Image (cartoon, rainbow, N blue to C red; front, side):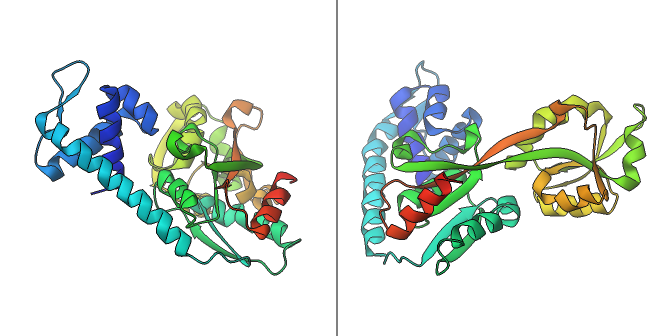
Length: 297
């Protein structure tokens, strides 16, 4: 059982409305519905009467509610106790980021911080879990910094937002690019353009989707992945066009191995802030110095 199922259950119990509960939980309504259903299937009983408006607890749900609250309370207490046992060190920062950012952005950030903290060590893990898990890890002092794109879907829940702080690092531009070898395909409006796209579950897809839609009739999907690095290599191999972080292809743009598609159309460029999150109560001196330096960038 995922503890988030219990939080979803309590939110729906409080609001009696899937839409309101989903907003409070910072997830989509279909996702909330799936998670409630998964909890019911795991327990083997219906927890909500969906024939009523608002949705109400069944007799099973009423009996289960105090157990759910007790489990979440016990987990929170355990996390705090275990966190307090972890030795805080002043020579290592543990960072988590999206995979794309760990390749293109974090090296610059770490280099910037080490200019004034040359003895500081870094541990970096690419994001493989949901964003809410990483926010919880910040609250529980399991990690020191989270680096992510600033999207509406990438915000902490209301119950923990007050314990976090954030800083703007820089803006990233996603631009449509193609190898110079395929550039002639852009000129003929009747020619389909081979399209290298991001998987639906990725953060990048959410960022660039409005731009993609503007030229979608001309695009023919030939490849899909969740990794920007793979798409970049496919572009370099003349397999199609794609939206890529400008920082990732800066050198290729300069030597014209890759060109920007439709540079006159600014609507096809997607600019997104990159932000750093940290625990508001982390008072380690090295953390304070690094945070102050990030704020001055």
